[in-house]
Every structure is written in C-alpha cells, then in structure tokens.
Amino acid sequence: MARPDLRGRPVLLAGLAIAATIALVVASVFLLLRHWQLAPGADRVPARLAAPPAPALQSAPQQDLAAYRAEKERALHTLAWVDRAHGIARIPIEDAMELLLRRAGSAP
Image 1 (cartoon, rainbow, N blue to C red):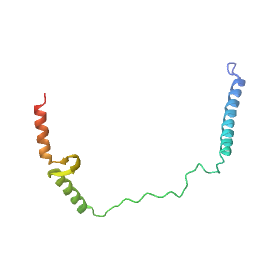
Image 2 (image 1 turned 180 degrees about the horizontal axis):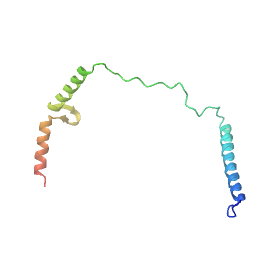
Image 3 (image 1 turned 30 degrees about the vertical axis):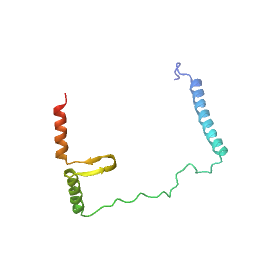
Image 4 (image 1 turned 180 degrees about the vertical axis):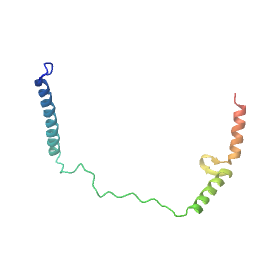
C-alpha cells in the first residue's frame, strides 16, 4: 500500500540532481587534467621512494649506555663554556640550585 505522505517525484528529482552533480564534477576534473596536459597517473606518488635507513640496533648496548650516562653525569657536575663569545657557561648543578635558592629567598 502506498503511503500518501511520501511522493516519489521529489525523491527521484533529488536523486537525479545528485547524479548530475557527480557527473559534472567528474567531467570537470577530466577536462582540467586534459587542459593542464597531465599524463595519466601523474598525481600518484612514485613507488621508488628511498626507504629510510634502518635503526642502528645493538645486541649489547650496556657499555655505550654506561658511557653515555657517565658523560651526562660529568656534564652535570663540571664547569665548562657553552659559548665563550656570548658569555654562556655551564655550572655544576649543585651551584645552580644554590644560586636559585638564594634568588628565591631574596624575592619579595
């Protein structure tokens, strides 16, 4: 039994409008590609991209890790110039914490 509140003509017209819009968009893209003289498949990424280098994995990195940590520990506890020309130096962390504590104590 047909429903009296549902008319087929507006639904059919809406479907035809959607189909016509899709056809117009596809035709426009095709014409633009021909106008720009692009070869078929020019929009695709070439498959011969270079692969990124593999990570340098170690089977036993304990020695390198210990050396890295010792270097960072030395940097925390020694004086050194970072940029002598601009007057930037690195100071031991204990001294830096003491300076910060003194400045915080004298702040209002």
